[in-house]
Each structure stands twice: as structure tokens, then as C-alpha cells.
Image (cartoon, rainbow, N blue to C red):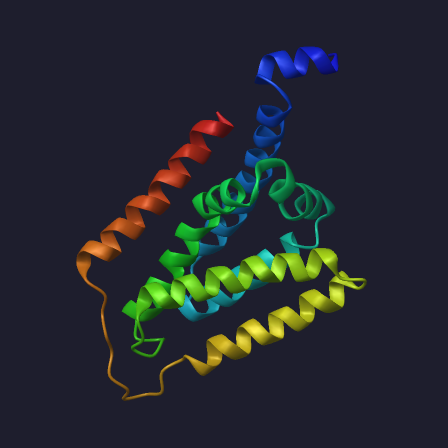
Length: 186
């Protein structure tokens, strides 16, 4: 297939790039969703999710398309919005689960989700731009787990459960992404 045929099929370079971006991010979400659905304690699932994401950040395709090229090709605002569309809901669901099970201290849930999302997004950049990506990944993993551990409740601490409307909205968001991925793979 010629380059011109590809551009015609996708409507141009921008659309072709965004299709590649969607493909890579869909793969990441599928990996993270699989971890989120695995059996186990919520705390362990979140830790496995962080490890999985940090492994993804070592993949050259993810680094090139999502971290290096997407902000330039798509523009900062569009890139952040697209990135948020994919992984934000899973992070939100996992943090919400930790709060619901009493694993995390009673802090504002939305702020925790935003901070973890921002931290993991920055982690991808740190890893992708490092001279030693494996060391950077290990360092970031240590920091993220230390932060998470510092937010973990001690036995007997009060538990704050987020409003049902927020929990339902998060679950609907994650379900919509999973459904879109299933349809995309078909």
C-alpha cells in the first residue's frame, strides 16, 4: 500500500497518526484492564498495575508514539485529552476501590486520582527520556509505591466512602472504554 493510499484512507497524516496512537493506547488499556480484573486484594492489584504500566513505558513503540511524537503531532491539549480518555478511568477505578475497601486514608478522592494520573504520566516521560530507562523505571516504581504506601490506612483509621454517584460515574467510564476496546478489536 502506498503512503498516498494510507493518507486517503485515514484522511491525512494527522488521522493516520491518531489511529496509531489509539492502537498503542488501546493496548495499554487492555493490559491494565486485565490486571484490574485479576483476582487478588485491591492493594496488590494496584501495585501490579503500576508495575505493568512501568513495563509498558519501557516499550519503544509506546515511548515513540505516545510520549515523544503525540504531544508534537496532536498538540499538547489534544494529546492530554486523548491520553486521559484511555488510562484515567482505570486509575480512577483502582483508587476508588482502594478507598472503598479502606486501604487509603480519607483524602479527597478526585485529587488523589489526579495526582496519581499526573505522576504516572510524568513517569512515562521520565522513563522515555532517560539515558537508562530501566533504572528510571525502577526509581519511579520505588517512588510511586512509597507515595502509595504513605497513603495507606492503619488498622482502626476512619474510612470515607465516596458518593455513589461518583463511583457509578467511574465505573461507567471504565466500562465505556472497555466496550470501545472490545469493539475496536472485533
